[in-house]
Length: 163
Length: 320
Image (tube, rainbow over all chains, first blue to last red; front, top):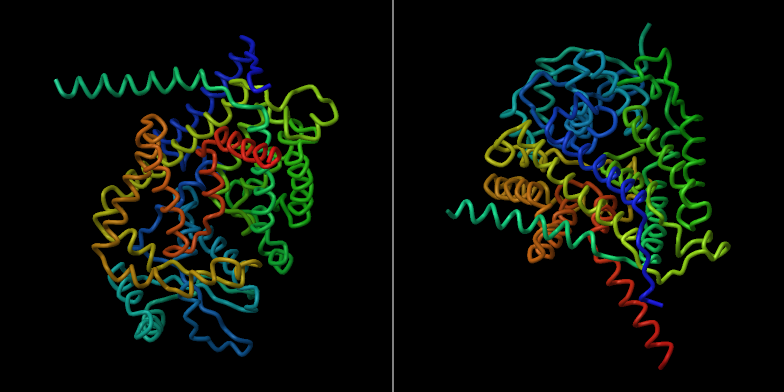
């Protein structure tokens, strides 16, 4: 029984060859061209993990309680790089800050369903400050982060939105 | 002279790869078993990532159109639409797994996956590593994976599971090649966007230090990632710049040359095992779950040899 073998027809061979050519050329095209610009919605997500440039003005979020008091919560800080990466996927074609806000808001809504209110700030920082914050996470980051966001920031988005 | 030697050697490797590939015959049930396992795992992983509990909690702002959906006045993929699509897709994925109306089921589920995965910004329910799996599903659209190990064949009895043909091998061949190129693309895009910074600067170190896991978003997170995030290995490794650079360099090398394992036989197992280790290390350092990449890499396994081995064992047990 094991020796039963069938050969494929010429027509089928041609079809298989075309499928091969299609897939391989698609992938080579993706490699050689600017993938993000050409296949932003389909192919690009699989290459999204190189985004990590932090030397820019970035957005971050702070959670506020019912009485509008800010909760000094480390996770609010932690949300940012993750979000940045998610937004990074679309940095090339969604350059308006409006878009970034929206993406961050969506991400935050998705990840923190328990938060009734939050604000998104734009914070200017640089990689060195950011890195030192991260490296000292357990010791000083909360304090330094609080200092940072209270001295140089402005609200760009609020949830729920105020009319 | 040595350059010419290398060139001719490379040429020989490639031509050998193509000639040998064209002659390989796989059993019909090998492809059938692969199809069954692939769609079963896809269904399980898919339900993991389609976190309905979480999506149901979202306010209307969650469905504000972004990306190309900005072209529409409102997001055409509301929760109800997405959920309906997901239910239909799951139904066809199950049909594809059991092999009932195999090819139409695969085509429909792939089409629905395409709609779902292309809207990653619309809702937080998909994962970028699922894209290669979608591509494998695309490949299976053209393959005769329902010839054996399927309900179709049980009813029709048209095909013999033990028959061998190139027909049952080429989907594996193409998937392997495609996955090799996905790694190449991942390496190339890192170099293109960040240059040597990715391993000479602190790119990977930043990735480690900024990795975090939100336990609330994962319904089944207790299974895997909570454990990894509690270990905080990313913070420990992230303290050592040199180590991060070394790992970064290794990653780039592995990604750029993963495809070599397919062409040069001697290097297959070292590269394949390195890739497995690479994906197993990522959950510890970046909390990315290894499920999808490992399913993707499973195409590289010698499926036909494994099938024969298990059948042999089975018959030995039966005779004894």
